[in-house]
Image: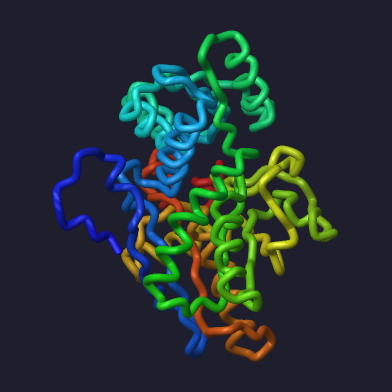
Length: 326
């Protein structure tokens, strides 16, 4: 992991090969490992799809050389796409709902992209509609559309998953990861199940998200503070395949917040709320394995910590729960 021992010609070559680190608060002998995606140059897991999607789109002619990519995004995907776009000679425009992290929006602008905000109440669906409208108005423009483009899933199938299996010599018993677009979990899950069909796969969402409805579970739609995962409308999450998932865990904002603070204080991980939620869910799965309730090929769980808490300091991520959610 993180094997950049020689000089490289482009920042794009530093994407991936992120560390896989064991977490220490786990039940019994079950081991939990987290993929630390903040080690990417844009400090998030979305750098992977930024490079992978744009390189494949250029190869296929989906976007012409010197063209423009327009993407609806909460921020991290925009940063990943902005890094790749500049290095690949493309212009970038991002449509971001107003409520999302200002740090992310500032970084997208710093990387040369144009940021357009849409009303918070219109949600990600409104951002998607605006992005498609802009693409129709501009010549030589394309929308990568992370929520429906199979290249999103493929990026993790081709990069993230093989890195995990290489690091653990194939000994993966369960995969636990948050679902926003669902590309990360779907790519890793598909690879994992090809290695061993008995691998347990758990999706993670915040309470207030409605992914669970795809499993006929009752969900009460509500606002949630955890960023980057969850959905208010499963119709916009076309990549999610319930057949690849064994169960879905809903994690309360308060639990995610407590855990992200514990991860910093006790284990030195400066991660955000989506990582806190993933860690909570991973420990739930570990407890089931330890108690003999769940049988897996190995007593090993892998999860993904998508980004860094530094993106959310202006939102008071390390303050009290009441201050963070106010």
